[in-house]
Length: 219
Image (cartoon, rainbow, N blue to C red; front, side):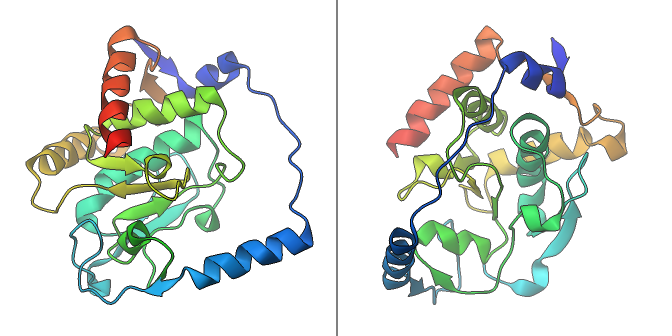
């Protein structure tokens, strides 16, 4: 069954919450600790095995939103699928500044951050203060769409709920298959409209999402 994503969000009954801002002293301490853990990534490949080559990076528009993001073309189909569903079902993307893709700054606080250097990771907004349970369930459903090719930062250490990365090497057969699938389903090729999605609460989809969560959260 296919349902409208905005209807799904309204049905979830999410409510807004006030979040206390950190005290200045604590914020300064956090910034100092982060700086102390920062290292320079000197390898020619990112942590997921993709080459770091700035001239391969291209800009891509996220369907249904005003946002664009710079990515490696080989990683784009899956990461754009993640970003599009995030926009409709988790937190709206209002412009280019809402999405982080490729970057050239080699300073990293964790190895997985190097995947931005190869254009094979994105950071999306709305997760800084933690996601609601229904939002996490949707993210798990998105990951199930991607058959383990995309990994969520919530399953990494340190956890980063806005982070998503390609978790296979560029010669992955599953990556190739899914890239073709998502390309064929794009709006430009008469695929489903951006606001339509298979029901993430369907029993088989929930079961698939739980199985993948067990695998990715344990690795």
